[in-house]
Length: 567
Image (cartoon, rainbow, N blue to C red; front, side, top):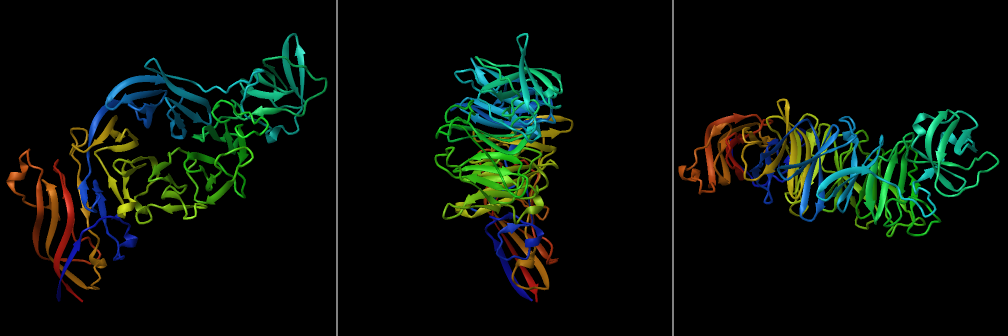
């Protein structure tokens, strides 16, 4: 028998998977629920939730910045956007998106407007006019001769189609040599004989009518050199969007999933390729031995393109039609059936991997030539259970990931201090969405049959006024102690705390000095202990648990175990 003292002063690795319990160099815990790892490596009880508003249904949260001083939270729900400024309701805006559409809705903000895209709907612009929020269709610009500057191409199913263009009583007909048109063509655009045409009506599978602006001369012979607009009711709409180098970028059209379209510089409605001048529009397709579905676009140091099969980047600065250096760097892949917005964390792009188990971080190597996609949850993969939303709060240095089971995995991350600590947040209900706005993190929580907009607040120690939450952390098994022991008997556990008013060790309440409960006192600072009379502990069991359900502060600096072991 020998005596031992084991002190853990850092919890910088957070909760780790059982696969790493034998690693003696890990500064982690076996379970961490409703705790955060703070800058010094200690543990602090998570902030409580303050109720902002009750929602009429489930919603997806998006942050909208109208100006340097005006920040809004958008609660997007079936047929509407409900807009909040901090905790106050501002306005409802009617939208065309059903609940089933919302998970795939993507967006990009430019100054005081936000553009939304979905492959089944024309892009929409949310803007504010005279203090009132409004929504309208995105419009492609028109040239001086009336041509619509929308991107065009020849789709594979139209390669053998010719059109005969005729004038019948002032109505222009486009007649094909075989069945081709559908009612969904109405509202789309064509380009033929040097003009763009708007399709007005469907007559039959071989006949539609169309109009254009400006003068034209009809040809005598059928036309084989014609194109359709990439975006239309028939061909679908862009599924991804960003702004990069003052260009509007669309990606992943429904009928051209690997396509990328960049507008002219500073003219975000103009996608006319023109003659290839430096500031004119750009189009390219991602080509590889696997089908590439563009999932999302990120404007970072380069234009990053995340697809279902891998991570691409366009590195040209400036980006011009003659200089498009496109390269696939990694082959992790992203989720295609929902939009989980990539987050910028300490200058790196963080995204959810296609397997729905990894959170990856894109970063350039030391030569700034190749991206790596490091797994941020390599030690904690068991916490990742089908993510449904993600948000990074740079002020708090926390990455929030909402899971389909209603819990959240939360990463406390500070590379400079060596902290990369995952834990879990739970509440009396289910988290369904998360967003960070103006330094505050908001969530949608389902409690019973009702949905609420709530936000984390450091001054709160309960959730939504009425719901207490348990904070629990458990130590790693003593299998990692390095003693190679066969039997362990623990005699005493000491927890060093700071500004603390509640503490349970192994489910036993620790009595703290009465004077700390005065409202003017911050709490107890020092060592708090329990003697457990030589309790035997299996080497694979957690030796200590610290917890509380009291609505009071708790901060842990270190945990020390005193005991005896037998080899």
